[in-house]
Image 1 (cartoon, helix red, strand yellow):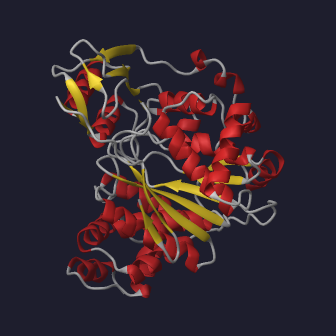
Image 2 (image 1 turned 90 degrees about the vertical axis):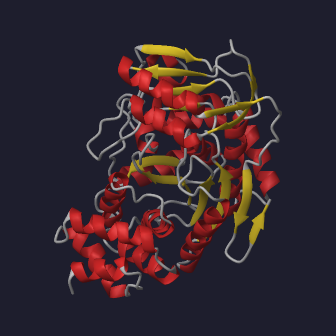
Length: 441
């Protein structure tokens, strides 16, 4: 079997066998297939797609490429959450301690940033000395002791995904249903959770631009999860504008902490309550979604969710004083407000353009070797539907380089569409995908 023939076959639109897919995954993982052939293969898949059977075969090959985490020593039903990614998506920082405070163990394996903003691991590194490469024994012990632990994906856990994930990021092959589904589910299945809640984004700032594509992605991921005995659901959520106000690592961490204090943006708070409620139901800690939301709201109001975040930070070597003193976080040297020439109601904020502006500032990675600047980013002052006058600030840019600031400013101002007409409010939650049912709102 030759990689050349497999690339040619998929390039020409033919279906790959299980053996051919395993040959690619195993060869790329062990280094016998070089980056340039893997890149060609990914581009062929991107343009010609994979069917359901190919996608499942790819997922399982990636799952079997390395170790699988055994969480059987953790008491209770372990529920994981994964987002397909978006602009300003900092939900894990909120949900991990919040759900753990409700009694559902959260053993979370996360990744670094893909594209325009940092990932969960990057964001947690905003806390000085926070350890993310922790031994499996400590990971499990922390979950048993305080209910939650966050760790970076190890090289031995779905190593095929780690290599493919990094290559997709720099070859413009991120936005493909099969590649996204296999990447997410191979990690989730290898991470050992009993149940999985998938936050599948749709809109201008998501990988799935069209709502129907988001439902299709959720459906195949739910089928994969449930097919191997993991109770899995997909929640389809809006990403036509950034989630919350903050975009950028430290800025998002601060907004997440505010949310745990009960002072977060409405859309971010509502989404976390929705996702967290499903986690509680799957974890056996609530009878229904509304009951679960009331439990989560009580944990925020009482301060117990915030205390759980402090426990998490302290357990993994970080300083929990950051949570009460934001001055301890890294700061940008340039902070400037942004104004628009037009006035009226904001019709749209192109999320992807906001993400690109953050990337220019250094909040994300342009290549595998890029270093993230944790302090930089954007904080919006206005959202879709808000009225903005000529003298009103629409955003603030945090930068450490004046040239990057100017470039980001140009991108950001073009992301706003303003007209003199009111805007109909869009639904944040588009629907839920269950194993045998799809509910659209």
